[in-house]
Amino acid sequence: MIEWIVALLILVGTAMSLISSLGLLRLPDVYNRAHASTKSATLGILSILLGGFIYFLFTHGVSSIRLLLGIVFVFFTAPLAGHLIIRSAHRYGSPLAPISVQDDLKKLHSKEAMEEEMVRPVEAES
Image 1 (cartoon, helix red, strand yellow):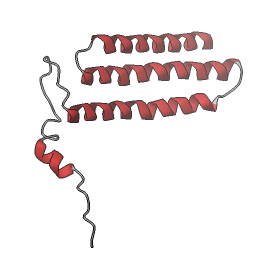
Image 2: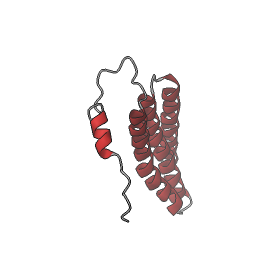
Image 3: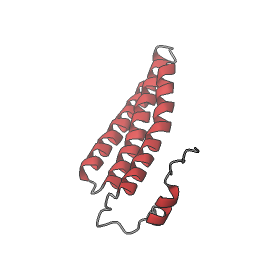
């Protein structure tokens, strides 16, 4: 029974990673591509790592802390990295796809808000 669960987890993870790679090829702009790579690739990798962890735990009696740390590391870093990539692309001025209907970050990254957020050098006292 464990082999079936592990096989299912690994197949689901592989399918999610395949869907993610297709999304990177087919989606129109950097925002949609980053969304595809962070959401489905993260779920795919987590599913594959979880399948490996369950396999080694129940068939060999070994609980791998490396697999658990890999799961935690991917779970926290991949969505954060995707978010930072999207924000920096928006600040750089990467255009939205023509099919996009709404830009929620537009007023957040207006010229006035950007100027207030900029770091100004401190003048040295003499």
